[in-house]
Amino acid sequence: MAMTLRLTEEETEALRRQAEREHRSMQEVARLAIVERAERDERREHVRELAGRVRERHADLLDRLAQ
View 1 (cartoon, rainbow, N blue to C red):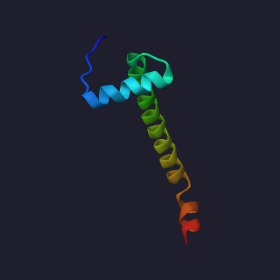
View 2: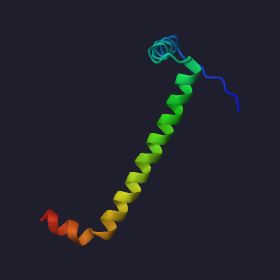
View 3: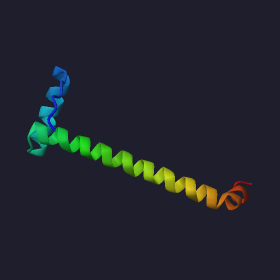
View 4: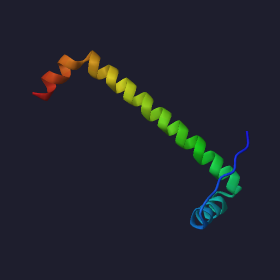
């Protein structure tokens, strides 16, 4: 699926500089940034879910430790 990404001049320049630093195309840098952000957010949500389970499972112990 194709899409058009509209960037400001400043954003385009930042993307160009990043692409040069990474020796990649601007398209590849943008695509990887999207993938990395999605993966980071998915990991963050997974950690939140796991932390919630731990809090539920060990609520009594956590309450005692807090006192």
